[in-house]
Length: 331
Image (cartoon, rainbow, N blue to C red):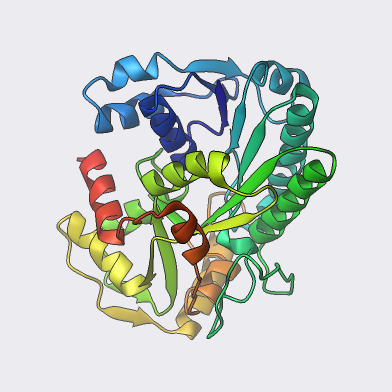
């Protein structure tokens, strides 16, 4: 039996799909009132028998702050895939980021220790990898260095990793994965689906920086293999392709039949943009751009993902394949 937290998210849903494809008994934690229909839609996107696969999932109602529900969900579970997290770069979400990503992870770790789970795979982020900006190379050995540019999200994910290490010190067997920007079918308006929706509407603008993209299917495959093959306490970068925002936005736009963006946004325009959005959303709503996203959108990122690639012998899909997969899902 495997348990997936955050099963309705992009990564969690794809982990469920990969586990079901292996014939594993699967249990998933969902919050009260949450709609798991997106998981069935994703399974049907990939498989003719997607609905039948969906009904093989044992859904357990509860959240990361319900200790009893977590222990019940982990009863007789061999592996826990901890995918649940809050992703936000809105400074107003600082408290919720700490509560969900740090306190929630601490509770998952405690429940895994209490129930004797064989191994935990924790989903972290490249946000916790140091050294990858502006000419450097980030890898698993580079620690997170908090400074005035660090986002609340990055801080919360780094603190969550510390909770996993605390669990290891107390006897938990755990590995961590650090994916870059994950692209795959998911709930509209959530995570990278928000960015994709905006670009698919058509825009001539793009920021001048670069990032790295990984297909959600590859993240799921790597996680399931690392549960068996990874080394306790190690981090594994999951990098599909390093890509400029111009190329990424072009692939997304063209997948929707829209023209490629052609106007680079200068840093001063991004600075004006986040300030205008801050004013616009002062009394409600979500900003299209924040101070953090504006100030990192023009930066160059480089990561060395060879550790996981060599261990697993995987060929990660291209960004073009990942974008095409989402376009096929959206229709």
